[in-house]
Image (cartoon, rainbow, N blue to C red; front, side, top):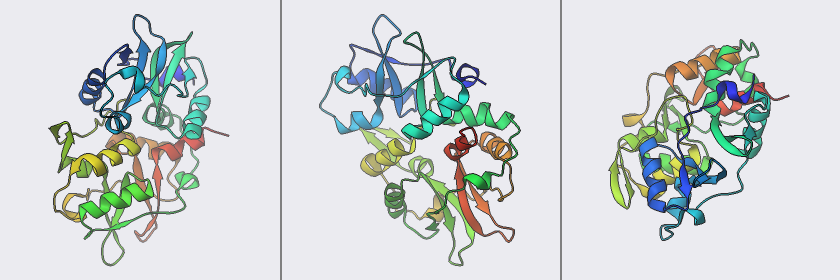
Length: 278
């Protein structure tokens, strides 16, 4: 399977020369944390611009000064394994796809999980790719504290346990954003990322950064906003079945539970990419 078989072809971009306002407007419209930047009049890739960079440089109006030009990319005819390896190596969730130096698509972690792994009948147990350490949060934790835990741990989603240590839910930053207000110069109420399985989904770094720096968080507890209907797997659940569950329920991680229902770990969509990499 090749990159072109699973990539998102309908790519939205901004152009240089251009402005900060143009980039921010497209990011808002897409509910995205990053978009490609191309040279005006061509489809030649210049780099990527991120919501985080825009937030960190509020006084810079020229788009050219906000672009990250040192971004990894893949070619349209590269093998899917090469794209998975590049995503893992660069620790990013999306890569520009080029053909003869021009931007023709975007390939993301979700593209690979939803459009490839879910269809490939990989029988390896997902537990082979389980996170060795789990950061869980008590259901009585204030949301503001949960945001700090997400930021410190680097996880956008946290399993939730009760006073007895039982798994009772999961909370991610999108749950918090939905009950809060984002402020980016002007207030944007309930600015949540899209849930479709394509390029335009928020990544953890940008979402948590926004949550911590730009969000007015209400005085609620984790149990007030967490997702209580859990999508879980066991240590024996195959990789492809796990990918199918993630696609069906539009989630990026799923807790792993033992036979008696106890939390054993968590598997993220990006972890499943390792099933393609030798």
